[in-house]
Image 1 (cartoon, rainbow, N blue to C red):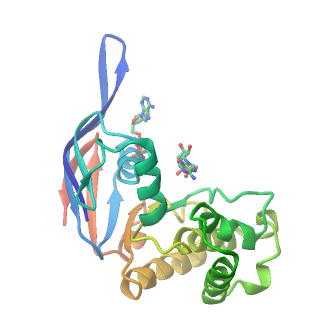
Image 2 (cartoon, rainbow, N blue to C red):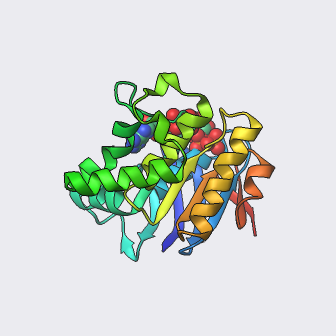
Length: 223
Ligand code: ADP
Ligand code: ADP
């Protein structure tokens, strides 16, 4: 589903360039649950942003669903993102002015689905995640764990093939973290959604199927 061939990412610095990722090769098959680990500054977020089509590599080739991402114009890239990718953020990134219901509905509006289809899809995830009673509340009225449930609900409501999650439990207590990780496992095993998460936590990585370790922008181990 995803293939990175000899990807590097660098920025101009002084007279030269600073490399954030160097010669990264990575293949992610449909149905995988991958954890990207490594110390702070290793390049984990940058790798996730490249995988999630939010940033381009400076060198190398990225194939997403067998298509070279570099060759795509902005419109096609946006469509690929909209139709296949869900993102989950450490800080949730919910829209404060919208209710839980409206936050979850947002990707369906981008997808231009009709009102009745939107309604039934949002109702399904509210029900599945056990947050029907919270649907008219605003993010500020929820605990961190509940906000992240809404974040995951929003990420899956449009039925993506892959979810990219950047430290999804970084702000949560351990019991809330386990709830989110169990949910990811279920989405992976039952729904077949491919999951790629950045995490510092061995326990979180234990919910996944394999780990890639980065250090100083280089893949040092993988299993
Ligand atoms: P991690 O997620 O593993 O902590 P990041 O991918 O966030 O690592 O960042 C890796 C390195 O790249 C850091 O040293 C960071 O300062 C640097 N970096 C990230 N974005 C930029 C940028 N836009 N310009 C210059 N350096 C950057
Ligand atoms: P952190 O993991 O450090 O908390 P965030 O998850 O807050 O970082 O955000 C990571 C990056 O993703 C930020 O640089 C932000 O600008 C970008 N970002 C946030 N929301 C979106 C979005 N909906 N689409 C694309 N990029 C986003």
